[in-house]
Length: 295
Image 1: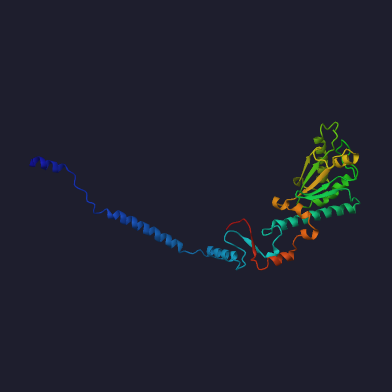
Image 2 (image 1 turned 120 degrees about the vertical axis):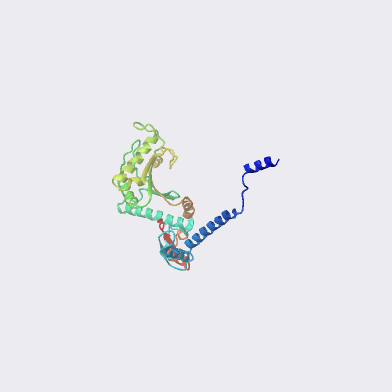
């Protein structure tokens, strides 16, 4: 038994000692501490430029200091009395008043040009939420039945309208219409006839009037939108027309207020004067207008 027991002991592996396992945890702790000190050292290095940008941004935001830069973009500080009317801070009602005033000014400019040439009363005007519509329809005949060519004083009227619209910022829609009578060759329907009339006006406004091609378009409505439901020669003449529409670029919420303003007396729909705006903004911090270039 002793011999067998001795032989078994000679084949057994020596037992492992766990006395040094603590070193692995200690080394991990030392590594974490080293990383922490590296991070603390990096945070302790102050970037003077970034600090100055942060300081200026906070000062500008609280209105305590007039600076031309903030930490995200370059910009210019604009005093309240110099802020444009179409900038932020104006209510939809105020913007609608200003848009209406611009449309009325454009109408006066067109009418003044027509009056100077002795063509007053040759067009009708309508201001609504679409913008300003100038209708080539009145006592004058601009188009003969089943024809698209401009006749009478139509070319002079269109040139005068174009002179006012060309330098403006408005997009222009030229909309052709026809009376209820069915056309003859070469026009199979009133759609082609009304579209041809719109195109004739468009070409005149571009080629002679100087309106930018990118700012104008033409469309034909056939006889679907008559001004007069009668069948008298006068009614047919009114429906045989072209509308030139200066399209408002204001937001829909602003344009929706224009019809309501038109029902008010002129003194109530007048926009706020610049000096009144300055009084309303008195005491407010300056407005910072920034560009999209980030630092």
